[in-house]
Image (cartoon, rainbow, N blue to C red):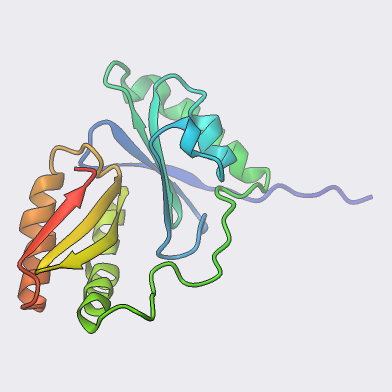
Length: 193
């Protein structure tokens, strides 16, 4: 009888601008492109066994899963040198077992809504094409919330939550790009900063 072979998982760690967050990058996609899952606590991790398990480590304060990586935010009183290898090994073993990082089904594309105005469609397109890849590189994500009277509301997730440089990223990067590309946009405001 043939024994099931474990999935080959290559996982490396990557620092980001938030000193309390660390990215654990896998060699394959963990969730669908453009979709992110932010778990600020264990109670919110209903659809992710991996996130639940990571919260069993006392130092873990937040888990974020997007694309091909998991971003873990730790408490201030612990150094990465103390826990990074333990967390990496746990994530690697979990993924090698073949379990999914997140169990979620979408009946429609969560980024697309037919009732969106043309301006909102353009905002989402710019966020998706220009901003999302840069924010993901830093271990986070940006999610469109709303657009009213020239103000774009977004939510910053993952390592962007509580990051000291997120306000600069928001105003100097995201707001400048959107206001330059779309005259209808006057300001960008974020939750989770």
